[in-house]
Length: 418
View 1: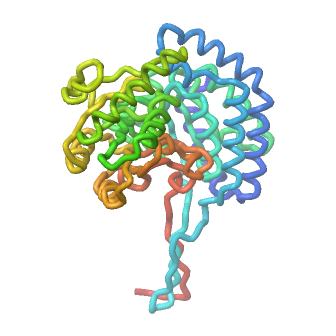
View 2 (view 1 turned 90 degrees about the vertical axis):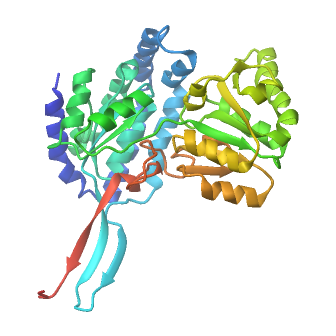
């Protein structure tokens, strides 16, 4: 079994060769990676079945859903790689160009970051997404997945390495074989080998990386996502959007966790929301949504009294916190105080209110009359994503190919001196 340091050394050694690969060769290899993933479906599903069985009783049902793979999900992962092929190569792109009065020609050009480390938890699709995005952007990657998805991720990497090996790029995509906290710490402290670290998972993982990493760290965010139902909202539109944002896949970071409702519409809207997300779901054999309600909402619908912490919790479950406010301004202030700066939405037919909300809310993705579930690299046309950054430096929001590059200046002269 290769040690963490051995894996990082090999990744560092191959990274300079990756940076020189032509786009056509990258795309050829990516196509083979996608095919290899589908060809290895039986082995991947077998490994996944072991991971799922081991995690039952440890993870919640919604978290198990994040872990489970099917043939269709593997096909979707392969198609994600094929979508990356269609995107322009960010390496070598000219970001800006100018000629100075002294004749120097200066170009600002996209370059790979180098070696990208990703620490993530129980979503196996992150393994193939990270491999594809890093390879297309000219980066070597070193992955560390959580113990829940370890066997599955190892099987995915074996398939991808089989596609890379004939070209001599087997070390471009790596996964740590040891699954320990010590291995994660080694990545965080590997200033000689890792150029950037991206944590992708729950609040605890992200906080640990941000607080302990000695290498540059891109903060990806937990998603305490809000939907504000304005007094001028179309109620049917609001109901459809919230149902999608809360129940389509509650275990993901772009699911809605908090619904804020204007007092003027609360008495007509909340009973219908309760019927949709609880009564109808229960009668159809689906898991009903539990409401954590503030005092005003509690006077209109049944629910568990909300504690202050309920408005600062990423539930990742069939739980929705509900707050009633007196104004758009109060809604904006509440979101600003409790948001993780991931995704927020306003439902309203009032364009002026919508524009105020879009401008005032300081999150990576702010929606008007649309579900927060769209905050996703694939949905944003990025092919797939390496994570969703909630910081403001370099990369923000869904991170695709361009966010996995930096830049350098190329200066061409003819004997100029200063």
